Image (cartoon, rainbow, N blue to C red; front, side):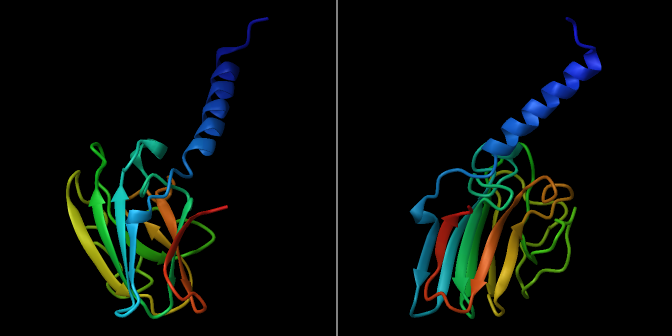
Length: 174
């Protein structure tokens, strides 16, 4: 039996989408990405865009679609040492409030100074910037690439600001 071309194309696209969904959410956590200084209440996080080719390079530290969670205690200073290692695409970073739908581009950040700047145009391969802010309010947030379309394509991980945590932590999302 011979399937019509349009049906075969649809089946192939569904199979590819299913395989992509299984392979793009996460990679392996490197414990050197996160350093904490309890005395100064500072969490330093090495945030790398396009670390792997997962999700077409649209990932942070090899994770996309919320597959990695950075938890910091409320009131701590957060320093994201951002670097774009994606050889093909520019990327940016901003911290945004978690919402039912991921925006398609930049929106106001959840915390003052919680952005790299150059949100729409992004940083090209090899470029870097530090993002420094105070995690002043508890809740669920996204570390989000604001280059138009990137966040909506899954280029985001989670930031949990906790009123009960005593130190920062990294974990893969369930």
